[in-house]
Length: 90
Image (cartoon, rainbow, N blue to C red; front, side, top):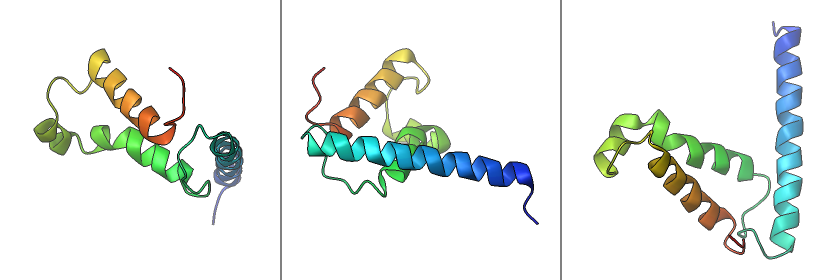
C-alpha cells in the first residue's frame, strides 16, 4: 500500500515535470532550446546532470581533475546548457 506522503510527493514531482516541460517547449518555440521532445526533457536533464556523480568511478577514468571541484562542476553545467539551449545568450 502506498502512503499519503508518497502520493503527495509523486503529485508534486509530476507537477514540477509538467512545468519544466512547458517552460522547455516555450524556449524551443523561441529557438533557444534544442529540438527535444518536452515529454522526455525531465529525464534527459536528470540523467545528464547526475551521471558523473552516480557513476563516479567511470567518470574518474574518463575525465581529468577533481569531479567535485568548482571548475569541473562549472564545466559540466556549461556543457549541458550548450547542448540543451544552443540558442542561449551567455
